[in-house]
Image (cartoon, rainbow, N blue to C red):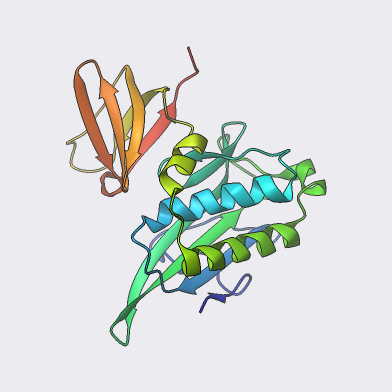
Amino acid sequence: GIRDQPRSRGLGDVYKRQQWYSPDSGNIYMTIKFKDKNNIPLSLIIGLLISESIESVSGKKINAGLKWPNDLLINKQKICGILVESEIINGEIEFIVGIGINYALPKKESWWGEIGKLAKIMPREKLINSILHAIIYYAENGYPNWLAAWEKRCMHIGHELKVISNNDGSINFINDSKATNVSAANLALSSLNDIFWIGGGHSCLLYTSPSP
């Protein structure tokens, strides 16, 4: 089954090596643990489910775009982050998913967003309930057409990108590139006649330039 601990554990409990700004001001901090037998990249599907829940609860008045691989943005500002970890319990893999959604931030960086006044049309409790129901339904039934749904909400598809790598330098900058599609947990970028596949393990930051 799915176990949810919405307040007792923050995102920092998922990745203890990182520091997270999680003010106690009515935001959403959820840690969900469950078994996933679906062969789908979990970090991508969770982002998709949250985006769909935001749209549903707000009556389609709020559209949260997906920033590869698993951030959600409103007006090009990050309002939700997702972290996924796994552990083996009695020989079975269990996933721990940390979700943080900004409703109100006393202080923030320029790229941080918040629900703010939109909370009137998207109450926090209703969004939590919708996300939990969506994850339960996914765990029990899968999501057959998830890839098309994810690409439809992806902010990068068809937009020019700049890719910055934090790893060993195998990827530095790819200029004048466009995102073409998503395959498993990779994002395909096309540049002239070349195709670049960027995997989540590269720790890349992707920035979407203004549409032409």
